[in-house]
Length: 430
Ligand code: B12
Ligand code: SF4
Image 1 (cartoon, rainbow, N blue to C red):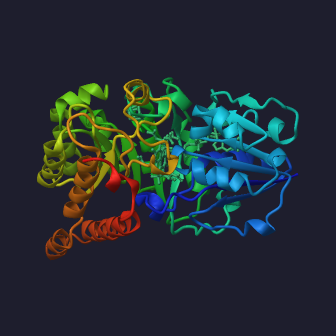
Image 2 (cartoon, rainbow, N blue to C red; image 1 turned 90 degrees about the vertical axis):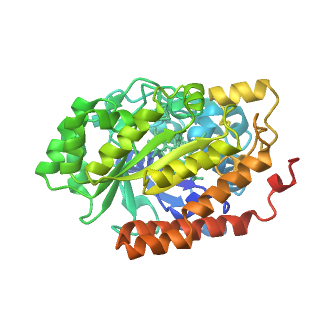
């Protein structure tokens, strides 16, 4: 059979549309189908947009996050419904919605069911995937299936674990992958890293790379031994409390950590059930910087305890603490999350346009400030952080890499403002 997977493009208004990193789901599934003798092609519209009038296959698999669901359904409509199967985070959370555009929807991890679904051996409209218990049993994802991908120039994702033991109120991860932390053996990960093209920059896209320090240490030891360096990962602040782990991360060539700081407002940290304090955040920043590891600091603004001042406090904090790159996300009530449940109950969600569910657009009425003030405040804070004057000041200090990221951020924000001039939120009551 010929099977095509499609990952819809991010909305033009999304600051991530420039980061052409494919999701691993379709690649894992495509690799499994290829190994079962099927012909597979994967299209990530941000990397290569196919001419749909020329595309034909026995099965079209579409992968959707909430922010790209609308585009995913548009693509589905281009094909006969009986050929379309939809999966991914959003479809797993709202399967009945996705089923309007597909013959079948798969909920959750699909590796164990995909071949049977494709070959018509499972016929249920809603198919329940199963969490993979032995992640070493999965094949290494075959990136050559992704049409138009440029190797090794892109930052390539690698996943070494699934699930997260925490349960933050705004996060979709545990709803899909569960709270049980499952991980691959260090040997299995190293074999994948060594099989990839040289000079590739890796991003460990695990939601919590250091959730089980013992296994992370073992992996880092092997990375050090195999001279694999220049990588980034996602961690919580706790990672910085473990001196030994931190030392190993630095030695094994960690260049950037993406850290979910989430807030400088301690009431907001509590409301998010983050289980970390502002002093944990400051400690983490200092500890990573001491080891010369750069920090991509991620914050979520708009809780019921945040006001306009919180936005500026966050910006000032990021500048004072010398966070290298800054991500300010507007709190987004993703279906299935606790935040969604609460805001829905209080009838405060004013937009169901999934395209706006990308962390860059406000879709609910905040408590202590207006929707417009939150939206504009976040954009203004971005403009300030990624200003040309800050870029030049970094250049003068010869901090070229940071300067380059500032400049990229500057262009992305400029682009965002251009695309959003006529956006709905400007018409929301102040
Ligand atoms: C890498 C990553 C990114 C990358 C690349 C993303 C991309 N190409 O879209 C970057 C940094 C660019 C990014 C950006 C964003 N991300 Co992101 N990202 C991730 C991350 C960490 C890993 C993705 C991954 O590869 N997972 C591993 C694979 C194995 O899982 P999977 O792709 O879901 O596939 C499995 C199943 O879903 C299913 N499946 C998937 N597709 C299909 C298709 C078919 C046909 C079938 C049958 C089954 C199926 O089977 C697969 C195998 O088990 C996830 C968290 C996570 N754990 O998934 C967040 C996550 C997907 N991101 C999220 C969000 C919110 C965003 C942003 C809005 C920004 C933000 N953080 O606020 C933007 C939006 C991007 C966009 N496209 O519009 C949320 C999505 C929530 C939601 N309800 O949609 C997640 C879940 C994180 C979270 N904390 O909640 N992201
Ligand atoms: S935000 Fe991070 S720590 Fe919290 S549940 Fe999601 S993945 Fe886990």
